[in-house]
Amino acid sequence: MKHVHFTDVKLEEPSEEGTKYIKVRWLISKKDGAKNFAMRIFELQSGGYSPFHKHDWEHEVFILEGNGIVKDEKAQETYKKGDVFFIPPMEYHQFINTGKKLTKFLCLIPYKK
Amino acid sequence: MKHVHFTDVKLEEPSEEGTKYIKVRWLISKKDGAKNFAMRIFELQSGGYSPFHKHDWEHEVFILEGNGIVKDEKAQETYKKGDVFFIPPMEYHQFINTGKKLTKFLCLIPYKK
Image 1 (tube, helix red, strand yellow):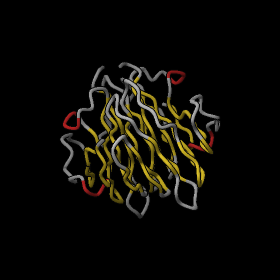
Image 2 (cartoon, each protein chain N blue to C red):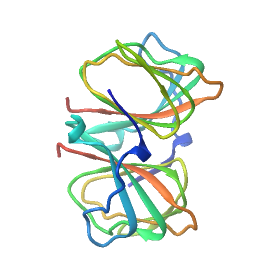
Image 3 (cartoon, each protein chain N blue to C red):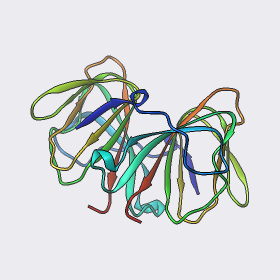
Image 4 (tube, one colour):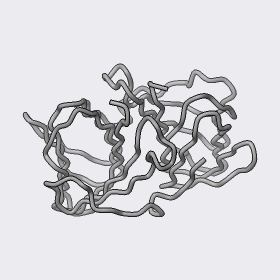
């Protein structure tokens, strides 16, 4: 088995455009032999955001710490530690850290779509 | 999107045998439209354990809180908050809470194997 602490994994700039103050660690990926889905952790600083976008794969998200909002096309909701989000394919979404502290969240994506 | 706090989701007895003091919440599953993988949170009390077993699908695990050990066929390692485990298909594994406090961990599994 692979066993690491999340802080052992390289903190990288995300490849997407339209972001601010966000970095990612690919915790479990194809490099580890994961064939079905990948686990990433995002670290989002106060005032930062993920892109407002949609795509043809889903997200499964768990908020580890922090406070902010999640937007879709119609509305926005607040997030807090322990919140779970399932974002189906082709739904717009964006995470915005409106709090003062760092937000950390897990976001898992499929390899087979 | 689906948005819940993990404590909003029913805490259930797991279906597997060979467990002690462990319960599960299915946070994201087929019921939500998830077609590729499911997110569960396990709550493992002091002295409790998951089954010592293997199967033909992988686990992607993130330790949210607690301390204990993870065993495979050959060895055991300690786990702590923030640890990440990738357990490939057909590898024996067991989580044992050897600490005094509750352990909570996320464990994700594929639907397509």
